[in-house]
Length: 399
Image 1 (cartoon, rainbow, N blue to C red):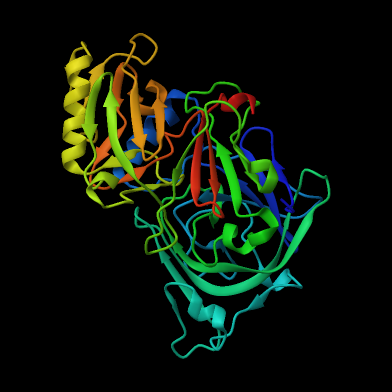
Image 2 (image 1 turned 180 degrees about the vertical axis):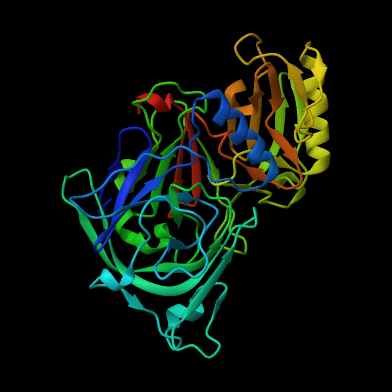
């Protein structure tokens, strides 16, 4: 494959750095802090909303340029930053991106084909193209659609620049992103996602490996890779097709069933029913979200196997909780049976320590999303040319 290799590593939770002319952008995977207070509040907040911006950021800078921190999201299709001048912005501890200080920043005019290729753009009486994006947690960004030069570090040690990368310069933003976060980088399948824009340079391949939520090693990080460095291979790799559906931003897979121990829980709308594509895999959603009937049957299967005292969640967010800790009880293995790929999910991926002495099933009824808790300690690779997502059990703290 004649592609550039991008394997981006860092200390703590930096995934890779991007330079927009005079401002450095640091992309940070959705991570969690290991402290009990933040751990518990993060889980509670995650249950409140379908997309959560989790609260562990590592800051870095390139030379003496300003820094900011941005969150990658496989369920989003646009790269946007909070920009000056800001009409309405959420609190941010790092400097906002100032396009007036960039020599390569250009607003996209309304007459441009780019303006009309992006969802939720408008012009009204404006000369320049505006974008609007809304997320499932009621977060919102609105601003100017523009192009800017993007620079990635590579495994060769030489930065690689991508001129005229489409970004959103948001000056009207609301939501629940942490104060360290300055925007979102879309890794989805839409026309202006980072993956689509990098195109043949990465051969349509990227992968990530999420360290466990309870990881206590301060010098480990989740990893995000592009191109040849993103190939998932070796023993125990399983792959499942990506199903093309509208909107194209989402990576849609076919989940046929779960197994809880030896009990199989069918997932409606499987390929056997002639309806492929029934669940989204999303690094920007924390919990596993399932259709109500599937959730009910899975919860029942868990109850049959877990011989612990069942207690109510004081926040009334989780449907199934026990008086226990994750360390003291052997919770059952849950296997996700994707089309052609059986993925084993251990207790760190399916149960969460919501409070001290309170363990809850990390699933919610209401949709169909394979969230990032379930992806912990899995090397997840997306090959858009082959149209597959691959999974490999991996100790992500050692990648």
